[in-house]
Length: 315
Image 1 (cartoon, rainbow, N blue to C red):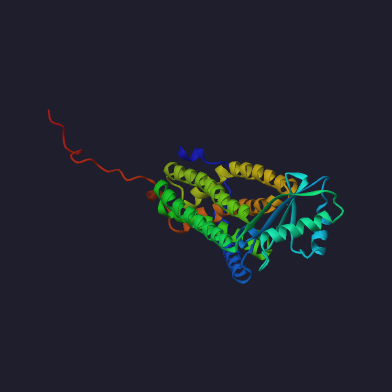
Image 2: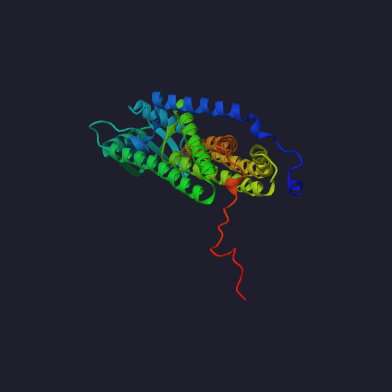
């Protein structure tokens, strides 16, 4: 009677696991090659530099501000709004032998002599390269530590084959996301690092939901093969996955379009991570567990008989 709980139309996900393996291998190898050749386009949060916030008396036209700064000798200036259209943030790479305060005064002077009216200095900060390198190192350690903690957690909650699939799927998501940023030379700042950690959590949540259903179906569908049980579990959780991913993508697309340049990297990393994470929860985490030989015996807890349980009770 347990077969009655199975979905009316089960999608044969595992039938395409072999092409998916090769697809993932190509993506990972390509990402690693891009990282080894191009590495990452680190932002000022990691390389160091000068951050200047200025206020205009009227809405600022960012293309005109960029042209003015380029004419003043700052063609590499990153200019974007923050807060309102009258507030502008300018980020500059470090100049050797020039203090951040001097650079800030030069930028302010160039803007004040432009056709922008009154321009006021709001804030100026200088991030040294040593601090940026430390942030990059701490960010990498945070991701590695998160993967180790997840391995311990999933191993305790499920079975080591499922745990290995989950951790490799998360590493798969992070490597490919970084590979996309490296290939297209997108800027990596602290918001992208935060997005990578969010991708790890998002992908893990999706994988845990699938694993819970796999464990449950292993106990209920006693005559089914591991491939059939994984197919059934993925089919049963598909609607939940599509709804969750779809609503999240809708929000991220809105952030990317209207959120401004300051969070483009964050939205881009999460969009890539959601697509890759949804794919990996099916064809990396679950499929790898099947490849490692997961079966019903692994999911059923061993019953330990108490000493003397087989003895007749005394009258």
